[in-house]
Length: 628
Ligand code: GLN
Image (cartoon, rainbow, N blue to C red; front, side, top):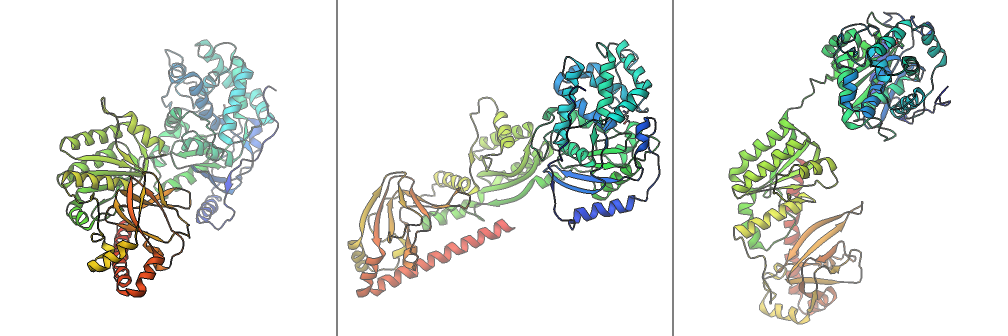
């Protein structure tokens, strides 16, 4: 036999080790509930199918991120039959392109039985690829010059859908090939209309063989989950279907997947699905999960009776109908906060901070989430325009955006342009590594626009917006060269004499931009630093190796004070962002001074506690905002 594989490996599916999971319980209850449903009859027109156990019953769900839940006879093999049709259609679309496939096979529901000879009276094209006529034509369209090559292609796509190699049930294949006179007639009809080129019999044989591929309920759930996951098998991570063809396959399944029952199915269950005469049925909730049921008793339309009952119940109980799932557009906007609620970690002089606080509510950070398509973008743009009158700048936090449509990105750029015309700005934060969001923003830039501003995190974005306010509103005082100790808050309230005492024992230390002034973990260095000019950043290394800025400090501020509180090792790195000049004071020397002048150390410690209390308040406020 050409291309037949001899082994089936078990699907490498992640199965929860315990049966006590709520989801597993739910499926078990559903299985118990519908086991007594014994309506319908096993298909007998293919003699070999009549041997199926009418009581067999399995349900399996595979999520789009690869979790499997299985109950009942989920590992009992049966033949695919018509459930193979969407898979082979996907192969034909990928191999020949949509236009070429459409020329040979239509996309209209037939409203007739699966084995009807429904051909377009003019072109002879079968009405759709889910009835036998269309499926036989489709089997002739997949890549390959010979029937053997075409079979190889069919085998390849099936393996990709299941995550393992396939075997054909030879007895079922033979049984259908020996009795399938009607399908033989259909194949010759297709030949006479020029829908099949060359000898139609090898094509028909491939079709019979694809129907006889041996699967389990688990395999079909994997195939459904692959379609749910945009064409990529959620466990193997391998692509089975090009992303752009998945929608076409699901559309055909939605309109034609359940034969004569397709209309009622869409009306009641509302999920793209496909059934087969051996009792298999799979359904897809795009983006979420795939489900398969195996139960060989069929109703008058040739669909698994229990399969339909189970899907109907799950869909109704969980509200899964594809037309019922649209979340309200306001959900894309999860939170709005301002730089007054959560200022940046950049520390500024008391004067600048106070002035900044008066205007900080003009910096508005909008946290977006979920899918941003037409109405979601419309809602965000409308919110921006509504808030614009008392805003200076907007930050769109894209961290939780899962999808950004090209046109939605365009609308955002347009809103940005409109805001810019009013002297306001819009910047993005947290889009790094989010390929779909980044691509949409880049590819949708209006002509002549060079780019958009985006920041690694909200803190940097807020700082940038604060700097803008400081420049624009002349909220100044942040950059001055300091040549006495008086402006340092750590020395507030000290006499001139004391300051002079201290100044004498300090050393000057200058650093070029980019220098590391303090490295985390250092236990030798006991100096306090007083910035006279320039800026430094205090940076933590997080558990995952990423760096997180804790604060940016500038002239008039100090760092390294924690050594005075008995902390031996430095807790963070301090980098020079610009050229920096400092005065340093060793903690040991301060202790020496304190022997004769204890009031100096007392004053410093009091100022330090005031500063720590202020930082704690700010941290608490931030937590309150983030937890809201
Ligand atoms: N092999 C079967 C046939 O062509 C498939 C039909 C089906 O599952 N509905 O008759």
